Every structure is written in C-alpha cells, then in structure tokens.
Image 1 (cartoon, rainbow, N blue to C red):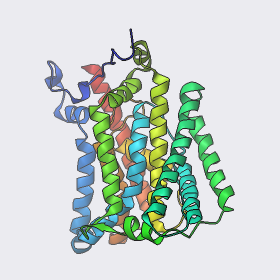
Image 2: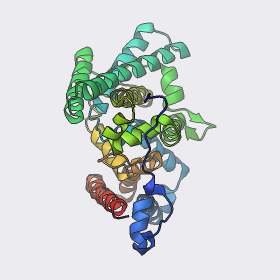
Image 3: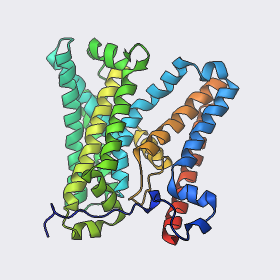
Image 4: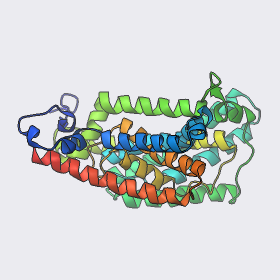
Amino acid sequence: MSSTSVEPTIDDSADAPEVEGQERQPLWRRVVANTNTPIGLILLGLIVVFSVMRVDQFTSASNARNIATDAAVLLVLATGMTYVIITAGIDLSIGGVLVFSGVVGARAMNGAGGNNWGVVLLGLVVCVAAGLAWGMLNGFLVARARIPALIVTLGTLGMSLGAALVITGGVDERSVPYKLVDTIGTGRLGGEVPWLVVIAFAVALVGGIVLAKTRFGRYTYAIGSNEEAVRRAGVSVSRHLLKVYALAGALAGLAGFLSLARFATTTVGGHDTDNLSVISAVVIGGTSLFGGIGTLIGTVIGVFIPAVLQNGFVIVGVQPFWQQVAVGAVLIAAVYLDQLRRRARVSR
C-alpha cells in the first residue's frame, strides 16, 4: 500500500451532529463536548465586564488597537504551537528561537546597511530561516532520534537563547532600520489597523485553513489521535512531525522579526515566559494536551483572553499581578473542560 493512495481517517465526532443516544446527555455537556462556546463566552464576558466598568476607556478604538497589538506576536507563536500540541507534542523553545532570530536578523540588516525595503526583506528572510533551522533541529530530534519533545525543546530553548547572548554579549541590538519600525512596527492599514495585527491575523487565518481543509491538517490531527494507525496507513509520521516542528520554528522566527519591528530592539531579556504564555493560550483555546483536538479559532480566543485581562486590569486600577492568578484559573478550567470533552466522546 503506497503512502500516496491512502489517507488516515480522522475522528470528527467532536464536531458531528447529534447521534442516537446523545440527546440523553445534558445540554451543557453537549455544548462542552462539541464547541469552543465556553471559552468564547469567557472572552465575551470579560469584554462586557470591563466595558461596563470603564466604558469610555476600554471600548475606545485606541484601546482595541492596543489589545490587538499586544496579542499579535503571541498569536503568531500560538499558531505554530497549535499544530505541535495537536500532534500531542510540545515546544518550549519558541521564546529562545524568537530572540535568536531577532538577533541574527538585526545583525544582518545592520551589516547590509541602508534603510530600504531590500534591507527589511533581508532581515525577514534571515529571521524566518533561523527559526526554521531551530524548528527542523527540534523535529529531527523528536521524530528521528525519538527524544521526548519536552526534553528536546527545553534543551534548544537554552541553546538558542544562549547563542543569542553570545552573539550580542548580553546587550540588545538597538540599531534597526527606521523603515521597518515606521511601517510594520507602528504603521497602520488605512490609518486604523496596525500592520502587526494584520500580519498576525493573516498567519492565523492561513494556519486555520491549512489545519481544517488540507491533507497536512488531517495528518496533523490523525497523528495526535492515533500515531500508530497513521503509520500503518503508510504515512511517514516522522517526516510529518519534522514539518510541524519546522513550521513552529519558522513562525517563531517571524515573531522575532515582528518583535524587532515593534520595539526597535532585540529585547533579549523580554521573552522568558513566552513559551508558557503561548501554551496557556493554546490550551485555553480548546486544544487538547493529549493531541488530536484543537482549532485556530479557539487559539485566537485563547490568545486574547490574557491580553484583555491585562489591559482591563490596568484600566480599572487592579494590580497587574492578578492577571497571572486569573489566567492560571482559566487555564485549569480549560483543561477540566478538555477532560469533560474527552469523557463525552468516549461515552457516545
């Protein structure tokens, strides 16, 4: 049986219409099992609460831009992480890869000199290529060497961040082409929507379409659901995992480029918790840590919950430290909902 003639089937029961016997389940359990509604309602509830408390400040267009801009880089990282977690993997290295990619990208642009789109494009290519290289290393060690993803990516987190510190001597690169900062970093499409937000949502949209509508997406779900069945169907699981981790690395490189554009510096010490923030956002958005379940729509919602919390707490005068408490509580609730969803699927 050739690998080109057989595609593994994917259990779509989480999104299927009601079947015989399912009507006996409570309505709330069916909602939990079939949709991202609970997480969406949490985000909507937060927006309503903060809007009522500070209607003029929270609901302003400038504040909406601030929230979206704060979430943009994390959304790019979370897009790649969604693919990884759906395969029942994990990638702790994305924060270090982001920093390393930004450092080598800034060095490349400074070395080329000038302040034009050619230099900016060079920086983009170098950032994405650097991220891709780290992602391929992760994928090779996970898929080919069969080292647990947690250990591999924890190791490459230290390697990539350490390499960035070696290159810079621990001092941020502060010379970034003005065109990059003035256009992508602070520029707006139509004078209203920041380009950072446009790029981040474009990445999430393309990632969502690929995940939901293509063979690559189906294989990703199938590997997370039953890796051995996919292997027996003739699909190269190791090759696909290599591609998934390479994608996550490339998007981390892109995130490094966007971070350069936004802050006009490499922010070497500013991404220590990016991996945990992204994993939390993806899981809050309904992607199962056990693999096989997840959507990019849920990830977008999961990214915006902490962004709205942080922004809202600042506006209403609550200590921002409470954001960590709130996000932790939502994360635990999300994992619990995932457990309910899995039990509901098994009980059908």
